[in-house]
Image (cartoon, rainbow, N blue to C red; front, side):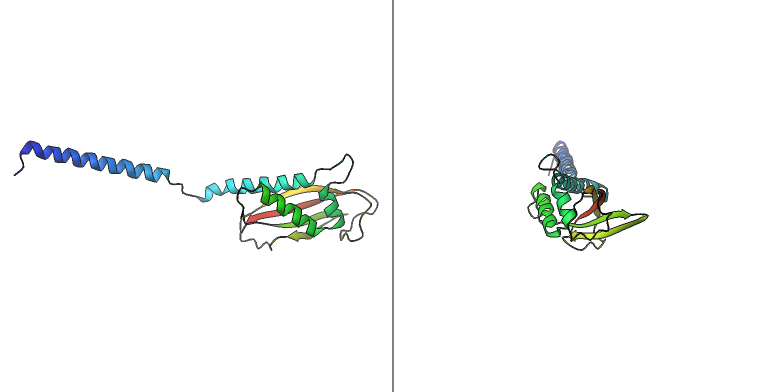
Length: 170
């Protein structure tokens, strides 16, 4: 039979074990990161920065007064060259080697009162189901124009067109 003063030792040990288990459970639950929809803006900001940086790099002239790579691609309507350069810049700047970033690019311009949008190129069709962000860049088109340019620009004058690139992970 157990004496009365020994029973309090079992009670103290039980309370200490319960406190230790509660403290351990609290630490474990606080260490877990629960991804909430409110945190998605961080991924969107990173994706927007990646796209803006890629377009900015493509829009840097190699020599003073020369056309930029982006101007050349829009002016000659070089969809393949844009895809290879833009996609490679997105991949090298991303921290994940198998990052599933997709894009769809559209060129928008004005002719008089009309605003016209023409699909430029895409890595995958944009369905609208995946959350996407938009990155834009104004590109100046200067004469002489190449013959395969599908834009109805004012011939013989400079004009700016808006390149919109929708980016999403999917």
